[in-house]
Structures are given as structure tokens and as C-alpha cells.
Image (cartoon, rainbow, N blue to C red; front, side, top):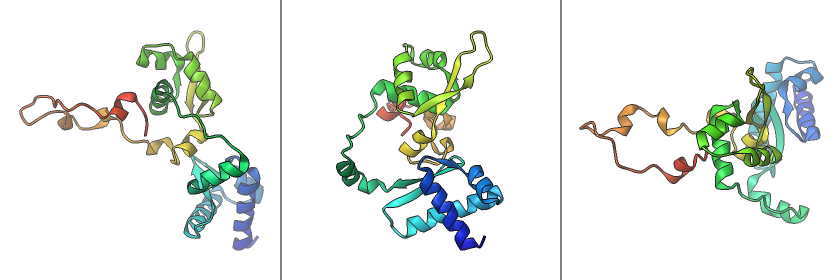
Length: 198
């Protein structure tokens, strides 16, 4: 298949799938190497961005998905009669941050970090498709492990969790001390206190 038709085929697959489609499945369907399929997907991302279309292709880990451009969200909601999503509560934001930065983790780990029961919050985050089960820990009782989803990446407009901003404790020790060796008295930003990832 010639290159132009191959690119059109990849575009058609991403559009038809609707949900994120793994690049390995695209490669398998077209009988090409996975690296070539990924290169074509990346070319499409650039082409859509440069042409300023109302839709774009986003990369989510090793998957690709076609989405509408954020600036047109309001008219789309109006046409489709969609309600705006309820913002995450403070507790949900904190739990999501703990999971995002430490995944995969158990609910018990999250509760140990926050010091309160998180069963309801974890369930609500699963329902919102921001986190999902990632297997079980090989310990007595085999507790469930949780991690973020591709929907999480899409909501925060990142391609992988590697793009999350660094935590404060990842900074150099020199940033937390003055020249005389005393700790700074500056209070941390509120977003850091709450554990929100962004």
C-alpha cells in the first residue's frame, strides 16, 4: 500500500475506533511494523495541529485517539445537550494525586498516606474512569492495585504519567535551606498541599 493510502487507512482506523486504539493493533491490521505505524500516527498528529481543524489526534501512552479541540467544548455540549462534569472534590483530587504519583498502589496505601478511609472516593474515581484496577498485590488477601487510565491522561492533556510535574520532595535539598542552614519559612503552594497533580 502506498504511503498516502497507508496514512489514510491509519486515520480511518483511529476515527472508526472512537476509543483509544493501541498502535500495535493498527500495525497488525495493516501488516506493517509497529514503529512505522507509530511514525504515521505522529505525522497525523502534526498535520491535524498545523491545519487548525476542529478535531485532533492525541497520543495516550502507546494508543491514539481522535478528539475534538478543547476550545469548541462549549458549542459541542450545547448541540449534544451535555452537562458539564462536576469538578473533583478536594478528597478526590488528593486520592488521585497519591495514585498518579505512586502507582500501582493499593487502597490501603492511599489510606495510610491520607489517614482516612478512601473507599467511596476510590469507587467514584473508578466510575469516572480516571483510575482502574491494575492487578493484585502478591500479599495475603491479594489486595487490588490501582493506577491511572488513558482517560486520565486525556483529561490532564498529557501523553504519559512521565509528564506529571515533579513533587516538591524531588527538588534538591539546597532549595529547602537558607545559606545559614536554616529551613525556609515560606509556606508551600496550596495546590501542593492538596496533592493535586496539576
